[in-house]
Image 1 (cartoon, rainbow, N blue to C red):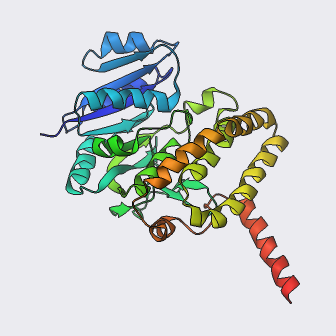
Image 2 (cartoon, rainbow, N blue to C red; image 1 turned 45 degrees about the horizontal axis):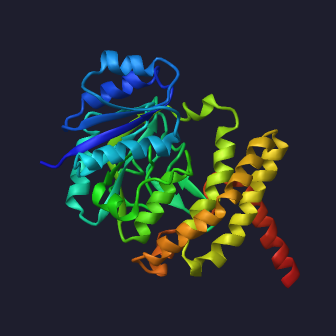
Image 3 (cartoon, rainbow, N blue to C red; image 1 turned 30 degrees about the horizontal axis):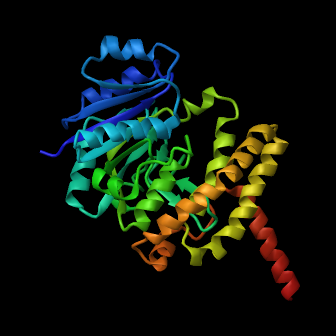
Length: 338
């Protein structure tokens, strides 16, 4: 029987963790539960060691971020010769057959490296993610986010990327492409690893019967300016590392416009300091990302045409201001051409 594990990175999640672990202990598919204790200062360690003796705990001395925590669990699982490892946020609850359904799909599809779940909000009122899209603007977006769960996304489907909050990963693929980029710390690392998987010839599937309820942004809301800083830092790296050269001329000009629109909005909204810190950190590590790009692109096994076909040639659904700006631009172009 194939060996499967579930990794939960945890930082100060003592309030959310019990429900998450209870949902994993009730799974219909055998697995090892691995909690990476990411330097919490709350009662998480006492909770884990006192109430969950069946859980493997990997204690880290300080907070290494989502990516450092996940990687510690993946390294443990690889050394234990697990075939697949699923990741689950500590503020998520998995339906009873969640893991079984993920494993069945990935086992039936040998060229699939990642299978992602249907993630709904904690009340089940609306969708959080049914896989990720990556757009010609260099922006990503979770498919179906904030839409009602009406059955529109109830079909097994190839998608561009997977949400790191509730997906399963093939260790054979990870051995080939590497684990999560720890420079990201949190946010967009799942886009990066999905992009690297696609470039290496691995496919990503969305399985709607693998269902998870998620308390959205529980961890990031604890730190003021966290999402702004991480977005400004990480979003350009996804493009720099992964977009093939022939597509750069299409993606980069649009991305620069979008990126500095975000930066301007952050300044106006009083988030200028975390946005500026993110921008500076992005630039500081940019030479490193360019070196990583060289290796990733050199190892690419698929055509540029294929990558172009799985990119969404539009703005993300939530980019309303950019849509207005684009519309104004085309009106100006039409006037000047008249």
